[in-house]
Length: 311
Ligand SMILES: [Fe+2]
Image (cartoon, rainbow, N blue to C red):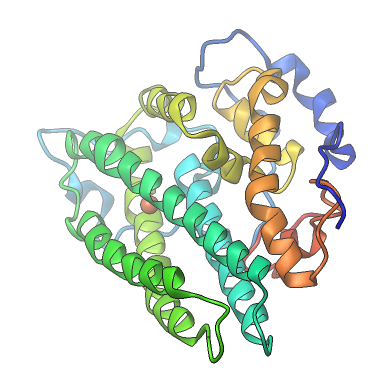
């Protein structure tokens, strides 16, 4: 078996260093105007609108008059981007389940990979729900009547995830073992989660941009990014598609370019080692030699309709 080794750099990403060097100011996160925004390439490129007129959600005399202050589109919002990360992981986990279910006899390493990937996905969803419940939703409720459903849906999603968790825990390599119970549980969870993510995209993201200044939201985003577990931060970074795409996000959030080298690149490598290599190995049967895009190409590009497309 080939050993997993870190690569020194991600050659396809280097171009962005030239673009963003001049955008750095200081180590304090602040809202930064991105003058040459180009949206990331992804299939999930839409943030919709709430079911009711945006002004009808107002409370305490607040007005939906902040949208014009935002210098980047809603699809570049961190809230939308983390949802796409979750979508991508769901697609990859299902692809892993389907691939392994084609085996006559499951191998131990395949079972371990499924268990580890599911555990990582569960953790990032748990962390993300915590950010919504403890930071963003309370903030929204200061100025709008936030519909109860998106937050309440977290309870049902957790129940569905716990059922997947139970079935994943039972996977074994014994005679007659099958992944059908896991697939069945996962196929109950994933559609609900996708609907939930879309609902939050269409309600929470437009409301926060209409009722809050970028600086206020940016401070919350900075809090999250400083405390987020490194592998989960790596999931977010990895699923932006490239260093260039992630550095656009950094610039929009006022994060100095060098933080890529101090922090984010390491988080991405950690995530690729812990999670994306599992996808690559399960899909191809070959252990990736390192965490480069080339070695992880099948995992990264397995389904452009779900995953961020990497050119
Ligand atoms: Fe969410």
